[in-house]
Length: 280
Image (cartoon, rainbow, N blue to C red):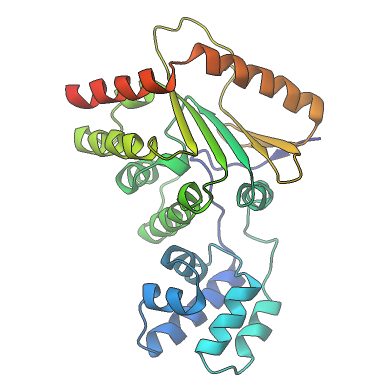
């Protein structure tokens, strides 16, 4: 199946709904009344500070465990459980993101090819904020903060899921554009060099001198579930496709495999990143 859905054009975290925002505000109010920082509260409920922030900002549907542990922290009144039961799961959350993020969180393999921007899982805060600041229609400060919080939470997948194989193929020109300026680009390359040292992450660059390759039709993402099912997502300017049709996914698999052979090796990709960093 190929589903046409709305996309964000910036790598995709969802918008929040009024009910999620309200629930998040209650959590934040209770936390602050208890004199706890997000990090301290996160330790008590056994979730990261980024997850706490994402819930408080209305970016994430709270897990049942989050609600239960928050109830224990705040006195077991039952109020949070009742409020959580009234949360709207549909309005305000991009359908494609709900489906993709749920799969992404448990995937055993995630492959990404990008030719427009550095993928969200690899972005630095400065790079992401430069993207958000230049988005049209313009975002306000609260929206920018919310989007970065959601993106930072997603990035924890790289280290929290060491048994998941992450593969990224990135076009060389993404670094030559120097989005955000020289300092942002330096930090970005340093970050990618650090990430590339993780055993479960592979980063390959596609040279501009590679006259043609199998990914010229646009960016793509592929993932494998623990049940060994494959799904794909392709995003464009104002929309995207969530793909579950095995025939369609087979085509994308073949293209990604060909691109892996056309891109630089892992070692040569690191070497090119180091040379680009030295030239800045």
